[in-house]
Length: 139
Image 1 (cartoon, rainbow, N blue to C red):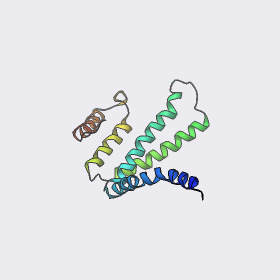
Image 2 (image 1 turned 135 degrees about the vertical axis):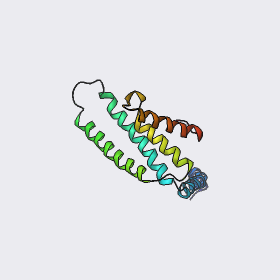
Image 3 (image 1 turned 45 degrees about the vertical axis):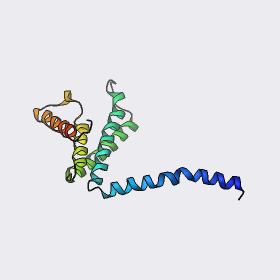
Image 4 (image 1 turned 180 degrees about the vertical axis):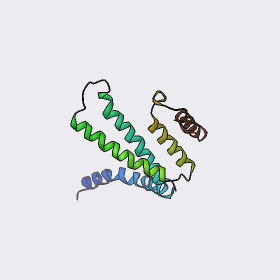
């Protein structure tokens, strides 16, 4: 291999070599966190709620059914949402980060206050917002 080719190979490998320790540290921190699985599940639930909104929003004002392809995508999101929600319900939070993640997941699941039917929903939203505020996380 020529000196130029060796230099180019080293330069291509440099970003990965520089990032590897940071990635390993982040991975180790996540593995050592007792709420790692809960944090991942809550992030997934929040994403699934946003994805549901993204898929459905174009059809809120449309008269008539959604296209079959969109209905299948929405059904897949709804099914996974139910599975992830059950996992979150069954997983106790062990840290402040776990409590914050559950509070964010609750808020994502609840949607906008105008959609609430009962006062208990307002109470749950208030509790979730309080948990995030007390622990220094933005809602």
